[in-house]
Image 1: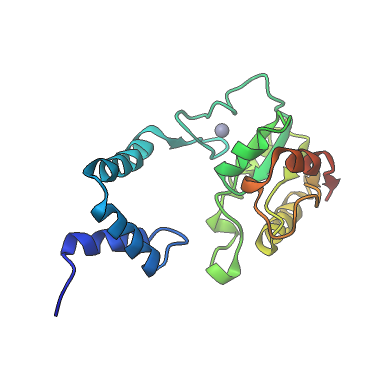
Image 2: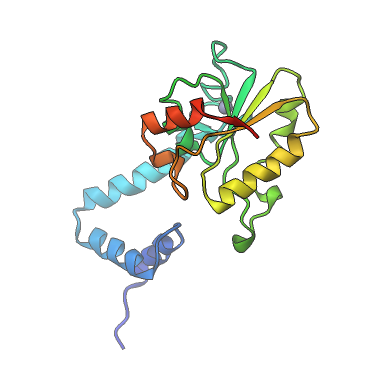
Length: 198
Ligand SMILES: [Zn+2]
């Protein structure tokens, strides 16, 4: 019986572990690289390693950056009294193109019972000490307008409501089920301006 070489099998398996990549795509990517010039495989491997070596999670907001605290948390010119809660670092990339100049908090996911992700699997408890300092007076919940994103926003709202902090949710200008990271600047600006008390 014909077998693929072990090294090929290993790469297929590595691709399969990536989110959103099934066995077929993993095979396609592997055979693409098998036929591509050596340089292309090298660039991919190098970029992945370099990213791991040069980036770190900010110890304050859990954004990715090349330093901790990240350049956003470290920027004294930003409004320290307002924190926007987002699902992942790519959301910051999109939202920071709007004129929002407060701080962020990256959850690193959403509550999803179907995927066994509970509140303790994402960075909710890490948010609490940031709110206890008495500096923050508004928390904007900017999770995606999906079922999980709404459930996560609701969970945080319940948790924070005993504290004396205004809680807002970005407006529904965003299409339901869509992702903040892919939304355009105008839509995001409108969603932010139209935020409502939660
Ligand atoms: Zn930070």
